[in-house]
Image (cartoon, rainbow, N blue to C red; front, side):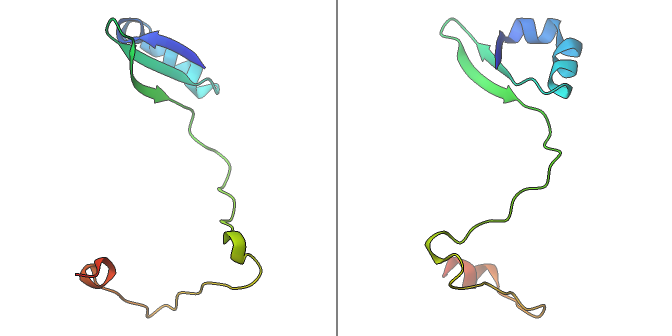
Length: 78
């Protein structure tokens, strides 16, 4: 992972964009203390893996029917 200051990032934005497109991860820092402002990472191209139900894997399944409805209040327990 490459690290650069805000000034370097601004001055080299086109190159940074190309680097990210090519798979490089870049961290942008700011100030004397090099506080991390953010990370630029390439967009994922592969599909996310199926989520595992942890300890219950293979013991249960979760199915939501097409007519399943719940209000925000019900969901939040208000």
